[in-house]
Length: 157
Ligand SMILES: [Zn+2]
Image 1: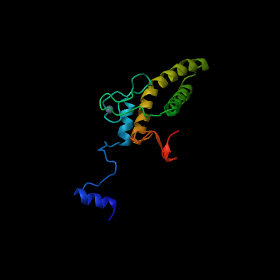
Image 2: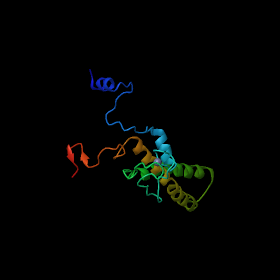
Image 3: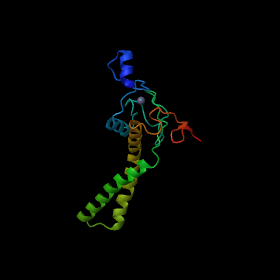
Image 4: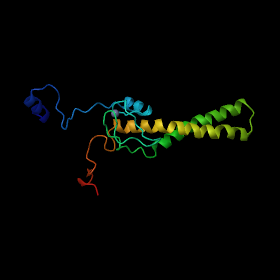
C-alpha cells in the first residue's frame, strides 16, 4: 500500500491526497501571462499589478497575492528590444523601398517612434513576465520558504 492509498483510505475521500495541500488556486500559464500583459494581478485578474510605471505592487489589493517575489530583471527590456527592433527595422526597410527618403528623414521618423513604442510596451511586457513567473511558481511564488536553500539543505547565507 502506498502512502497515497493509505491517506485516501484513512480519510475515506476519493480526492487524491496532496502533501502540503492548501487549496491553492490553479495557475494556467497562458491566462497568467495575459492577465500580466493587461497589467492585472495574475492570480485574480482584477487588482492592479503596478503602483508606478515599472514598480509592481507588493501584494494585490484585490486578492492579497504576494507580488514582491518577482524577479523579472532584464527579461522585459530584452523582449522589448526583440519585438520593437523587428517592427522598427521592418518598417524602416519597407518605407525605404516604397519612398525615396533621406537618411535624416528616416532618423526623424524611426528614432522617436522606436523610443515611444518601447516606453508603451515595457510595462505590459514586464507584467507578462511577472505573470509567467507566478504561473511557474518561480522565485518564491510557489510559497516555498525563501530562507531555506535546498542546495545546502540549510538556511540561506
Ligand atoms: Zn489579485
